[in-house]
Image (cartoon, rainbow, N blue to C red):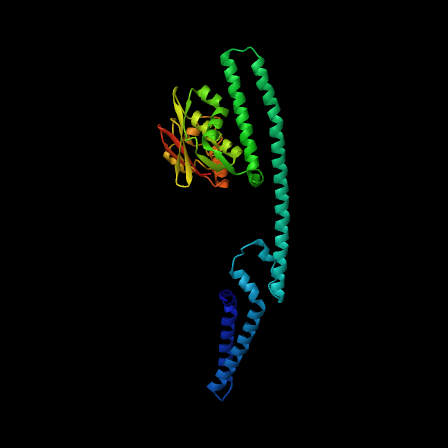
Length: 329
């Protein structure tokens, strides 16, 4: 209603000015200066105006109601807005716009699906030559230092391919997960074993303190990926021989809490609010050229989809603690 009056206000003011001018002219042109006659003529004109405005509002009320309230869904743009020419024209425009939007969205989705399929296929193809290089390296009689350097590069390739694969799968997460109860200690020990080369190479050792009977509800594959990302970060950012990465878990009501603490360089306070942003590496991350800034972003996204909570505490120069909260099985 307010929009209708705002739109018709110029017409009302113009009509009032017209009545004033006509009334004044009538007053001056006619010898019988009858105020009642002038008032009656103006009143009659305003009654006609009111009838017109009432008709106008009645025929366009759906249009004004739609314009005054935001759309809750795109399908609402297909609702007819009345029989008046203006209302029909706006309805046709919205339907046409909606169809263009659907066509463009469909095309974008098709391109995204094709790109995701290509990335998945390419990653699987790259796993074969990496495995061949791994086997070839084992058969070569190389110095330990050279062999360790090549093995480190192979491990980086594997981690990079794994991150690319899980990033591509994230958009189709609902089609690629299975929630079930699992022993938390077993999941952590498996993740540590899969990343043992990183511990050995950096001379960092794991310390696991998790109750054997503590079970959580999660997806085994995605949880392994999340733990792997945190473990690699913890090991990479730990400095000095003999440092450790501690895994500590405990039950808290209906939830289980897992804390992964390293003794590394920590995170600067000015970077703490952005560590979960995509592609953000921060001051510490720039010291390590292999940092992509995607690890913690993927950790947060996977935890959000699995209904886990993830938090991060840090002290520059003292280390970082990543805390996960799960529902217990």
